[in-house]
Length: 287
Image (cartoon, rainbow, N blue to C red; front, top):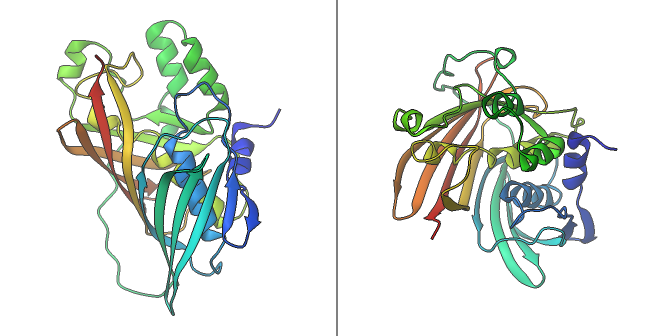
């Protein structure tokens, strides 16, 4: 049995079927749709495999157009938009069963010196002082629901919420639209910087919309809304390892019109700002 971290690395190891065309696996899981972070991570792998290794990605902008079907391979078609002296641009279209389900534009930048500033990392407890997500749910409910138990076995990231999870209506009324989690891959991811970048891209879609949901429903209880990611944008500021602890600070400035906007900042343990993230999600109440 391979570990969840090994399976994540395998998921990001696309098959090259032509110069600019790649095929990615899509695990046959009991989900309604393919996880959006998987598609974004695989698309970024496809884009990165058509560039020179000395230009790391500095930004991506993507749209989720249709839900992907679990168990069905996804083909990634890369357009080499531009190869400049300092910047490289790639556009990727993800196709499944002849239909476009996702598109992404990524920009890669040759490293060069410049001035620096950043916002400070929030003062939060160290991850070792916080419970694992599964342990916190098990302690609150007395047992881990079967669906969450299956998810825990295959989850490639250790997630630890900085604030205790809220479950009751009284707790939800006190909640503000913000959340923070420590995360890291549950095992080593190797030495390829692109794999670490794409693994963090995968993880960035796991909890970002928590900040939108917090004031209205428990994060890990029954859902009152159908939820889907609409778009996703990331800016990569520094190199990092996704198998080392990073803090994901998330907040939602607005939710209206059945859509909620969330933004996130990702820091390493030294307090360096690594990545900035924005995402809009669709929230439709169950009939």
